[in-house]
Image (cartoon, rainbow, N blue to C red):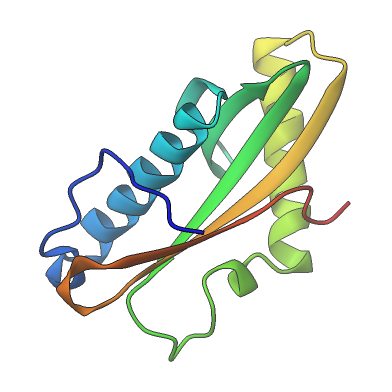
Length: 132
């Protein structure tokens, strides 16, 4: 399936690492918003780390981890969301609930893998309910 985003990816394969990560998060947020999700927060910081995106999908509160890669040397982007990372994210989600006290009937943890290829072409993988 081909998805068009409103995010400019020209030259993305040459961006410094931090900017590349920000671009990946912009792409994920854009795709989520175009798919009907409401983006509630981005880059929610806890003492344990940062939740990239917090969104609402109907009655479900969705926490999204975004991994962006320009090479497969370190493995696939979504492959970086392993059991250890899921445990850490669950701790951060707990911190989010303590601080924000959201009222949602369901909670889900998703992962986005953004692979930036030469020329700025992008391949995106969205995995729902990782670590469930």
